[in-house]
Image (cartoon, rainbow, N blue to C red; front, side):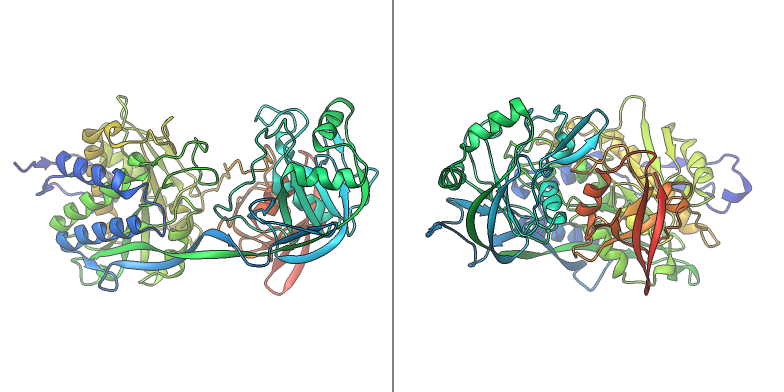
Length: 592
């Protein structure tokens, strides 16, 4: 049976043209359909919806098939926007390790690490303990105080002298890539990492999985027996003995006098993944060339594992992603059907994004390759994790400050729902709307909030509040309709961002107050997508579009370098940040 809701109540004058007193929702958003969508999207058969897999292709075609059945126009006839992502790397043919006349075998005796540079080098091996150099609060350590790294190949212990656990005082300095970056800064030709028994009793070589931004020098890990062979030849203690010695007595470093010859070759492997794009053409002959875009990411973490983003990285199991973000995709499908029956004045673009979990790649690609003129998009609504409405009916809504219209519209629509709206003005956030906000498009990000099952195999369809999801979808459908029927251009205002990321390498409390480009894959600097007014970067003269190439004289080639450099800074410190701005190179003094 169809449900009819009558909306007849007093509204601010601004909204009278948006929401009229008329029968609404000639078609139901059905609980049974929501459950059917999410059961499929979060099923074993889709294996966690990892980008570039056959299962993602099946999922994408399911979405476009539903859109076509609803009567929408598919982008490019298929509804699929293809784009490449690097989701893995493989070892090339030119990986070698030769010492004392012996050649050792890749994947058996040694392994290049995913962030290694490709090169062939020869040089003397120098031992540099845990590869630390820092002074932070009451803790300081320098494994290079009595050693020049220039031209050397550094042998460095993995982990730290306290523990491999996150509670260690050294945790912010123990990342393998950070150690390699420091060695590179000090002029090292390459880095050899090795696990002591305390860090890894089984002495495993890491698999070549995932992708990481590279450093400029070769970096590999060797088995303990290979490191001990080198140390024995140089008449020094074994790795385990050195580990215990450092634990009791502090930093230890020395030249070995031993030469090694190394080649590393890693080859990135690209796969094809998809955004889906469908359109409902507007009913107004003037406004139909303007658009409201609503989207949700459809990918997830596959089988999880290390480097996947799983919060249980040691567990290999399907990460179903029922709330994250089968709930959002289900919403897109149901809302599309609803709006077809309403025929709003502006056109509405419905999209689902691929590769969000890999760093918002799909939404960034869509923004740079829109099927319509960017200026024609009036607003973007993003649904991410909308399937667990709680008993208090809390609904988190961000981006409210990106247009002066939004808060009034949301409050008026909520009159008939009674959600406990938790409003946030900032336009930036860790989801797909960030790419649109960077292009000065008003955005609204809607979520029912995080939970302990996030990014674990426990995020399954049986945990979804299907009735609550239906309420959220109705609310969002009305929001899209209100924006699509608004007679004038929807104004944009800057609001934020607040950068909340806690990246690997742990720079903790230090931020510049920018939105970094998380998806840049090159090594020529770190692009700045947005500068937050009143924060250190803005006060130092940094601007949107600048490319950070160095911090305090140390090279920044990408986001990982940027994170690591911030980890070396202190609150209250003044630093010189080098940026490229069009054809100029500028030195900005930033007060932290």
